[in-house]
Length: 171
Image 1 (cartoon, one colour):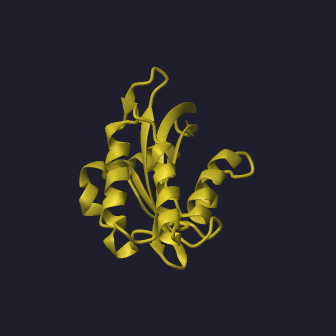
Image 2 (image 1 turned 120 degrees about the vertical axis):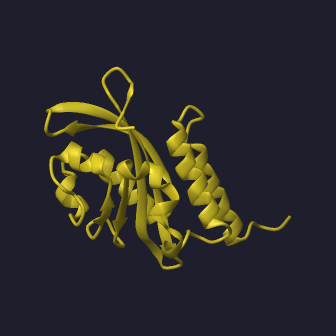
């Protein structure tokens, strides 16, 4: 029996990462997983050129695109209106580290770091503070890496937010 090729191993890693997305995930997160897989095809990562916000126009308010090759370089290239509402200011153009206090939120920095280093989709459920209201909102999020053979260049992110009763908000 032959050992799996690097491409086959990579396929298994990506498949395992996507299997971590539960069957109960919201339809929007599932849409983005399918979108990423369709763009990826047989390549290591989907190329940045294929990332077109018009492909997910209906979800733009909850989408963000980060650009950079490591977590300290990551900058918000595009952020939907929901993020301005949650943060209380425009986040487009800001560095990720300006928005997320990584010293206090290692759980969040770990998600971005894994997406960049392992070059795989990362699904997580977490909470953040809605700055203007001072209340917490829960979110279900997918981080999807885009780039080339040299590594991740962009991350497409989508989050669905929920109120304290578990009802979708910002739809």
